[in-house]
Length: 134
Image (cartoon, rainbow, N blue to C red; front, side, top):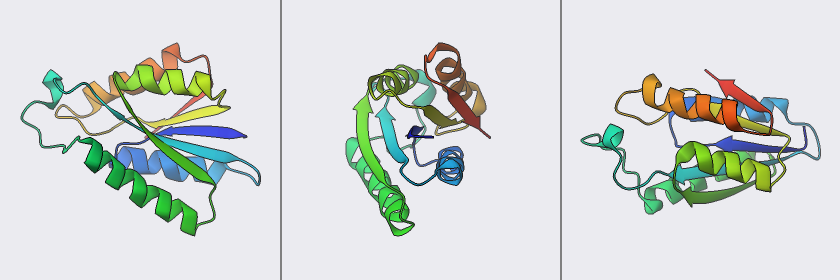
């Protein structure tokens, strides 16, 4: 595979995306996990306690990186802020990733509709290959 970028938000869909990416990796491959903090005022997140703070994102990333390290998976992690899909697409292009992996469900008040749109946007607009995981 080479370089694999995984969009991560701590949700079950994101965990499945991590698992799928790990199962595809071969010796010498590298994984980058990115947590994108959406802009602070997004209607779909209003009234839904997602704890989407940089501190919470760092904690979730630290947990997944530690878990992957224990499995011997070479991984780096970063936090970005902005439109979730746009940031994943941009980072995938900048890193010249061989694959972007995202879950089709994530942290959202309206579930599959909102984050499904993120996954759909990544799949449609990325110049890099994308794998959507259910």
